[in-house]
Length: 252
Image (cartoon, rainbow, N blue to C red; front, side, top):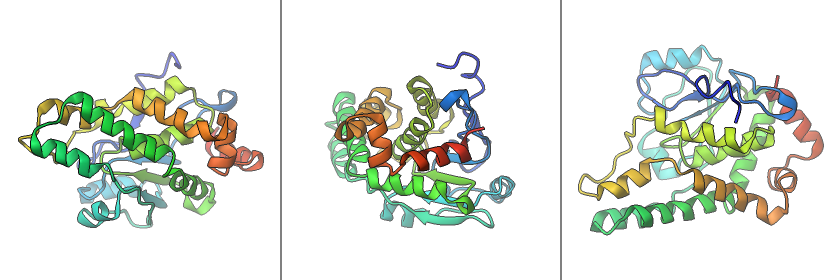
């Protein structure tokens, strides 16, 4: 892991209505070049943003907001966006949610079983939902789409894998990718509604980050393509020329 950065990265944008909105800039990737600040952002849900928050985001020049929440989630809590920002829905439906709700509702959930179900969801994101992340990469490559923000509900799981795939493409080390992922534990207010009577250990499993699950998901994303370079080219559409362009616009 980069030795002189853990206390400085990732860079949080302090907001009243979102607690996990971060600038992805600063992580070092290909040839030691750092990801530019002010180009890519990741976040939790944006429906609680205040008017002052919108002014703060407007100052970033934000152009595009990609919403990874499922259609029902997005409709139930519509995002607030600053002037000039265009919404692009990239829904990843939380199909595992029903199983989790059943577990929580009947009090049968343990931390181990809840974590196992989350692992199933992560593997789904990394394999069946990979085309969604490919579309996210396509949007990042469009000059008029940047600065770009992508988010889900907590900014942890679907967003976490998206950030991990982007940072992988930029040549960021796996240790730093995991450091960015677990930063959610420091920043996020954990204000995602869960049943009050659900077992506490199960609720904590849902709200925590899980580096082992993210690692397994990244490995699962690579597996069908035989190598990380195969994932980038055939899975994410980053041919050598497009990968060079991707790194060119994002890295110093």
